[in-house]
Image (tube, rainbow over all chains, first blue to last red; front, top):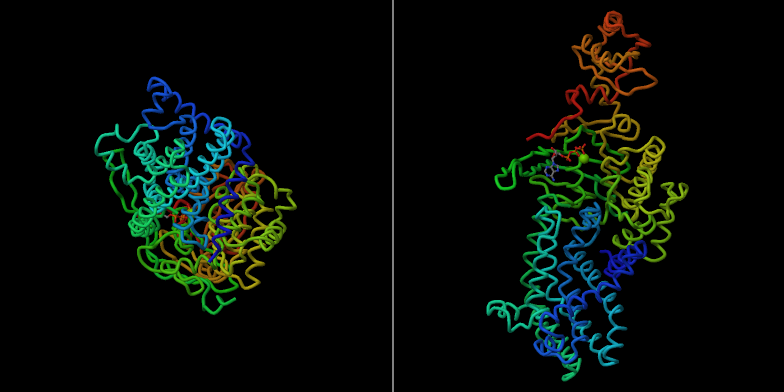
Length: 269
Length: 342
Ligand SMILES: Nc1ncnc2c1ncn2[C@@H]1O[C@H](COP(=O)(O)OP(=O)(O)OP(=O)(O)O)[C@@H](O)[C@H]1O
Ligand SMILES: [Mg+2]
């Protein structure tokens, strides 16, 4: 059994080599998060003014909140996108059979690779946003951002099983694209990043209780109001997340097994 | 090497596989079943190069993918070093090196070295061991000599890509190698290099399974050959044994200076047996006729008469030893495009 460590190294390595050989992308990945903040600020003006939006969302420090929120928007549900993205990517490149024939269970590969991908994006985002947060909100804002980063990583844990299922489904669907990419906007809608949850229809409000990303946004909000402080945010969110990690992943275990053998019968590798 | 304990490196037993394909429009598509394999069985011994030889669509890639744990058969099983590809895929993956397509299968933006490093890590190698192995393989496959070790995959020639593909298959020094058309599209020096590496590996006790539709290749590198057609192995043996099967027919070869259509016309007139055109060589075309040994000389006589009538010049005419190609033509009914069954 090849060691997990070298697998992680391989996946982080390939991200890094890819960026190294595509310098423009490296620069862009530092610019994108700020562009996302600009989009969110523009949305703020749709509320009348930034202050208005801040009040509506219940936050004190709108810019810091928006930074944290856009970090979330980029990465918290990213594991689903990343696991499927990795699977599709390997199919396009023709590397899929060689990855599948490596001495790992393929679902393990997808988890590691999906994580490496979203971690990589999250870290670049953090590196890009930190100077901005420090400039606008000082040290506390910086710490808040770090706390959100930590919660965000935990927040993707409940989605691991779903991510692997989604990746296998996207391979099975024989579509040249990620068939479950609608899940991400849905998760973001349910997260309360863009709209306060209480303006959503009742049914979506109920669904949002089950969406792990929501708690990350909650943490971001608490961090930006500086009331409970980042530590409390992490504790509160972690409690809900721990339950979800167990329940969601146990539920998807069976699906993963069935999907993988269907994919192997169908000849997608 | 514990694996040698298994009597065969690869044992394929009664493989059957059908694919379902959708045909027709977006909404009113129909499902159609394509029978790719209809009971494929063969064995590959340790230290042996085994060639699976067959026309397009015969089922070569399907067979190879099943052995390499990438595809599950409908029936039958493939054992690698005694482990089942269907039920013990992880054990099998520990023992195989795979090469499926020459021109794809790597990261386009990464260099040869980076690509090998990625797959090495993926296959559980790391640190010093991996570095040394990569250097060794860059040397062995001639990539270093070609100055290609730090070139991006997208900038590499087909020959370099094939060498890189072989290097990846060899990363973990696996006892069993599974290669799907490893020399497809390569120029003679690259193909020769690949073949000589395969022979060397076999002489060190490794088992090599390769597929090809190149008869010449099968004849010079393979210890044994299985001819596969429409999802069945229809003949098996060493190249010599297979050729002995068609000793009741000898190939008559004519070198003619003619246009392809003229040569085709000539081939048709002297036909009866299968005749076909092969490679062009300094304006000469080759027309082959399979004849029974008694009538071979009479066929040459007739060919020259027909050529005169057509205004085609015969540069040379001779009776040859049968080749694997003749076996192949005799057994599969000549057509290159065999087509899948279904
Ligand atoms: N994924 C698939 N879905 C549907 N049909 C397939 C699939 N893969 C192969 N086939 C069909 O199965 C048959 C056997 O294909 P296979 O690729 O095994 O042949 P092959 O001997 O490798 O041919 P070639 O020399 O062209 O590579 C063909 O008729 C092919 O069209
Ligand atoms: Mg093939």
